[in-house]
Length: 214
View 1 (tube, rainbow, N blue to C red):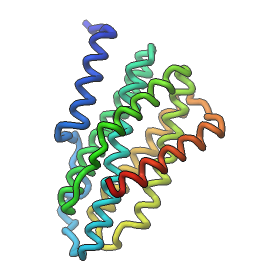
View 2 (cartoon, one colour; view 1 turned 90 degrees about the vertical axis):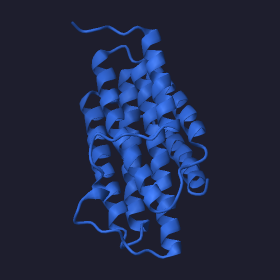
View 3 (spheres, rainbow, N blue to C red; view 1 turned 180 degrees about the vertical axis):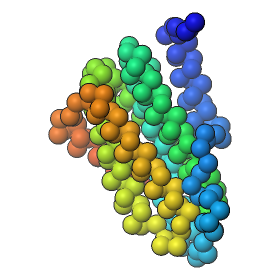
């Protein structure tokens, strides 16, 4: 027998996921690409270590925001199929969260001090997107993932050439994000208006620039 969860149940679950995202070590369901036996820890100088850790911190913040966005969209939709789609995407983003956090620690860096702020802001944006209806919410998901794909491409260019471990993580993240975008479009995601896409790019620029340092 399938249990139907009430709104109160889903609110409590969302609060639990929020606390786990910003205050608990994430647990991945898949092995990190950085742990493949054929990849050895690179010998990076201090500047390369700082740069790689900063870039992976930005990626980690992106995954914090992804958790918040998809948790909010799953909470707000009334369609069980849409809820399952967002929850499935959030689960894969949990893998990314764990992989990036582990890689940051390996590089001697730290995660963003502003993660609670990033989560709260992204959750609010996810609720707004969901209020526009499922086609627009799915379109928001697709556009988010397309922009993340471009962002990850830029990081592959900026990461130290010898940092194959970080590159392996980013490449797998990129592959997953492409799949999420395709899934959203396949489920009927609408094309967002140009001003909305510009606003998303501006918000992402503020987030990535700040997270690089804080």
